[in-house]
Length: 471
Image (cartoon, rainbow, N blue to C red; front, side):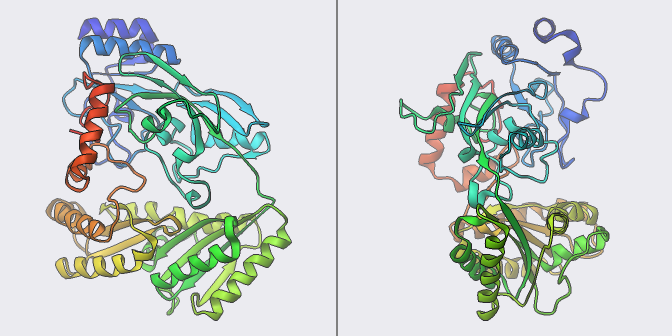
């Protein structure tokens, strides 16, 4: 391996090939649940360097783990323990190459932070709507490799829908450039969609041309107390009727999730957290292209209709941007509050919206019967059917011991229920190495066969991210 490391140092420079010292920033996953051992961490600065690194690793038969901001939640960018894998960090590819206001596009390299892409769009008076809690540290390449979702999928779609073109380094070290920014291009197979969501197993994304949008003229945010999750689903239907495309976000949060925020983040004042008629709360956002008065009129009509139909028991509407940001901080504070409470079993699931209430009732009852005292932290993007259905150990129970004893059983119960209700065990976090077994179990044999055919065709040496997504 010394020959390979020598070649890599020649390609990217000796200072950008790390083999010694504290490599935890690259070898440990975001949730600190796994730590691997890399042969080296290599940090190229250009697409041409990425291609040269891939060619060198392919010639040596050395596997590559592409990595962006290392904020993933499914171990898709964490090296294994073998000490054989190269971590290919793309964070030095961090240039916004172009902003084209007339075409409503922006071209950015894979290592650009999501927040930097948002800022570049804002400086042009436009909007890049992908929004995640980790936007200050996740990268656009990782967002596309995992087809990230976030809070505004309801209106703008996942990362896939926000991308018009890619630049990709193949497993053979060739560069495919498809950054033309066309909205219509029917010239053969859609290679862009092949690489988006493939988690670095088919090719390495080095740049992307992204869709931009006009900034809304007005934005209103409300926090509503609802009597049940079924009422929240009815409220969502009403919101679609009254706000149409103006509905940009619709988040549901269970009471226990909000109680954790109240307990561990007391600086955040949580509305209705102890309201007797509010086992659930909803955070919804309306973006209007006309005016603030028009937006408020539509919002008020929605609230009146929801009150009349019993969908909400109370509500507050943010009076200004500061209040709106405070409401969003509560929602985004749930994962942090969970972490402060202790380790928990996380599930990132999707269920048809019409079946979500029944799924939660069924699975809540199942888990509390099987594991008395278990605490359920349920929240997420109800507007697009994606829930974070997390399981916390019973009060006073050692969280680490609970996970070791029960995680596999809990996962089986939850994922079987998800399948029963026509859902997906991975909505926006990806498969990575964490959920490979679930993919084998719940995906159809035909789909798995097609995936393996693609993998063999594009990466016959199995150099790119082996052991992730497919085995």
